[in-house]
Image 1 (cartoon, helix red, strand yellow):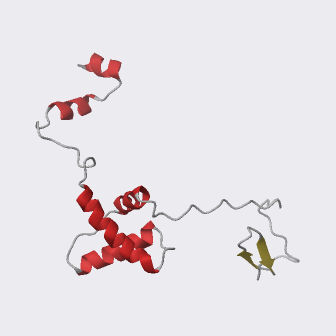
Image 2 (image 1 turned 90 degrees about the vertical axis):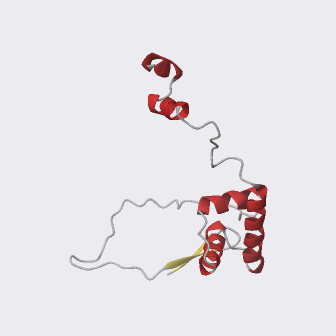
Image 3 (image 1 turned 45 degrees about the vertical axis):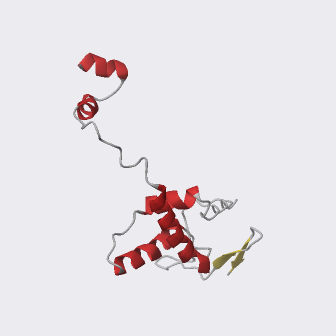
Length: 135
């Protein structure tokens, strides 16, 4: 058995579990009934109808809050992500930010010893992709 497992590249423990399963065993991750997803999809659409900028985490939090108040169990965020992804309800991914060309070596210079350094500046990201820095 050991040589067969090593030739196939599988663990012996996995083969043992598969061999001793019941004949009617089904993987719980597969074959989910569409009716369950349709009910979940309707609830998700109701929650994101007011604010379509809600992502799957926030929509899931609202849905789970409602489900808990009704005495139902909470849903996993991965399940919510999967349903929203299958029905194109996810927000577009944020564009990658350009890195500054300024070299930062980790040292901050101050005028004299034992003096703290701080900054009162902030940055605002514009719709055009530019960053405005205010000092």
